[in-house]
Image (cartoon, rainbow, N blue to C red; front, side, top):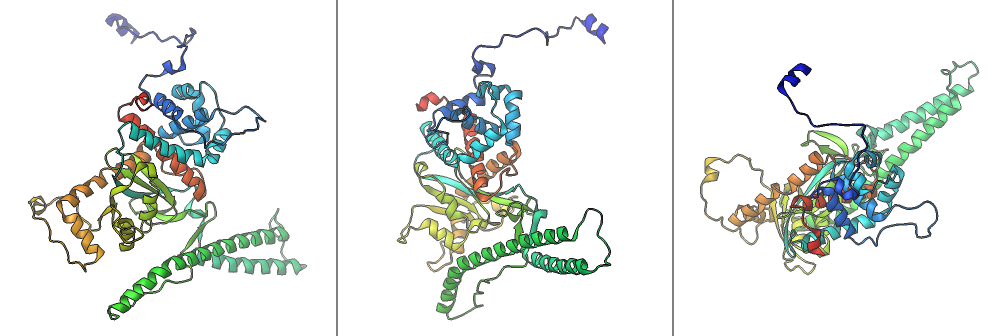
Length: 468
């Protein structure tokens, strides 16, 4: 092979691993000018970090600058690096990260502590980045159109670590029986000894500890059932009054039950997570419901939160409320059928006095095929508005059959769903690393913050000096 190359007079780039190199004196020159790391550094430098938690006493080891720590977390999440240990390793392995940290190397404990203790900073930074987008003329100021949706993100817990209410009760009874058997065995002088390394007191203690954990699980499931009953009771009373006012026609509304279902679950690893349908509803996993409101022109996430609810029926109002005031109000809200309910739509479209709020909801409550038939292609006249006494469902169906409604609703599928697709498939964030609802909310805020900054950079590497 060497002779062939010699005959062809092939020219190769000289690759020398031994001669010392003189790197550019400015660390920023180590990566291209349009690299994401420059944008993140400049953007974070422009943020107000008054919410950051630092050791004001000046005791202990020197602290890493908050600007650098925040930029490191944002850049790492924006490039699909979520583990604190992997982020620590990247400060040695990645040239852009070495540029960002100025060749310093915060360890994983420091990174975890900074992330865990700065929820307020991350929340404030999320808002500031949206304001930056407004100053850069990327995000519309005032009334906006948002597409709202939720995606199931796996919890840092296995569904095999969960127990149902019914199964927990069965296991408690089994453990009680085994404790009695062990106590009886201890009283028998000629009983068969246990296997080597096992003792009767130790086995009794282990079963009592397990029984206490199961009893705690059942108590938590019962508390959730009581809370669910309280939330459903007021709505049941309204349905009952409406049924009575209509002459008690139809089936009487079924009252909520003040007891847990046998299938209600409790997870020992992350008790605040829930069993949810994932993977196009093909199977169940321990998960959280990550919500996002996406502005349809910029594709920026303008509102975000996390819920333990397995479905979206109660999520529309709180998710819209998560849009910060500086962003403005939503003129149009695009949702799928999972969010739709008469109560939720009324709460969004009317204020406390019952007057129009200025926000219109567009909910696709009819299942339609993605394939257009010949009939669908034909030009149609505008539909006739339903009568005043029509149901909320009829009004919503009419709204989406109008020409304007159809055009509006087309924007939902092409905005919020691609955003979730990028977060899960491109960034690779499909599982929370932290546990507990409070920490999971923190991590989702960081994910959305990182996505928005990366999105701003992708819109053309905008010069932050314009907004100064």
